[in-house]
Length: 115
Image (cartoon, rainbow, N blue to C red; front, side, top):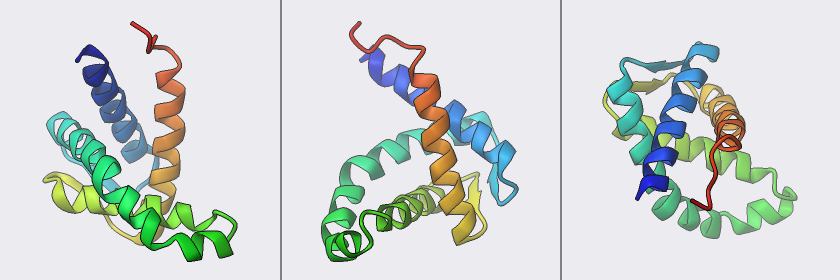
């Protein structure tokens, strides 16, 4: 359970950093960021595997590059379902999803996942 909370907080911080860097992404509060992190976990667990399965031919033809589009769609979906979290355009979602992954990956290096 504690690892879940750590992951939730790291994702929320990553969302705030992403919103500060990319002007087309707006997060109104820390609460919106925490809700967005929770919704992000749900979308990644439920929706993303289905999207990957349905877009498998496009992913294979693009040598995996279409997964960036899938990540952007998931990021946009999180913004749609999270009050106080807004993504203004597709390219904002695309760059936001990449930056969110980078920041979250960087921050996760500081926490021991075996505990």
